[in-house]
Length: 220
Image 1 (cartoon, rainbow, N blue to C red):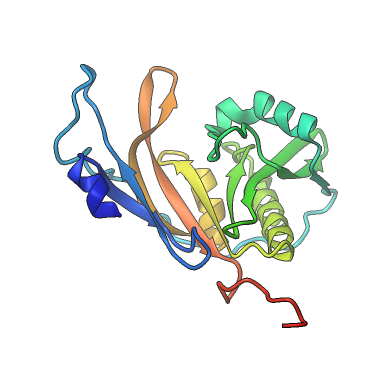
Image 2: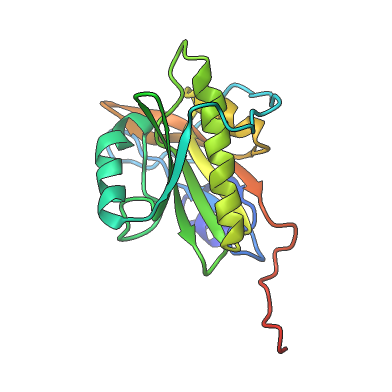
């Protein structure tokens, strides 16, 4: 299929392993100039810093309360409040917010991890809706713990793999997910709109389930 897309000017920028539960998905793009003309050969390759994983903080931080949120109205308000700063972009059609979120509260600070799930294909897109703040040493550890809580919940829902799309210069968010075992599987040129400029992004992926096959009923 990717050959067909390349024949009309698209180029392959990476892949989402296990996107279709038993098959990978390619990310194909076609980039245009400011005058609306397609760039032959695709966009220049994105140069992004390599993030080295460190040992994650998986112990629950003292004083942190954690809740699972699935109320549609609250999730929609969540995107209105935090989406722009986190560069949140919905991945599915006709769905403009996560369908599950993990809410952490420490003191007066709220932390949010969102996920768009797809039970048909067994994958989920994860978003750090409250990126770690500069010079706040406690933020990365809290976000690592909450993201792990999210992945545990998704695994209980038979999610096989998760991925995240993060702006290339949001190093704090990338460090959090790198520490949790995510690997870069795509580098996307000019994928995100930030005010009046385009920003590259990295796609991070991690498998949750060791088997990619769906569970069969016990009577089979």
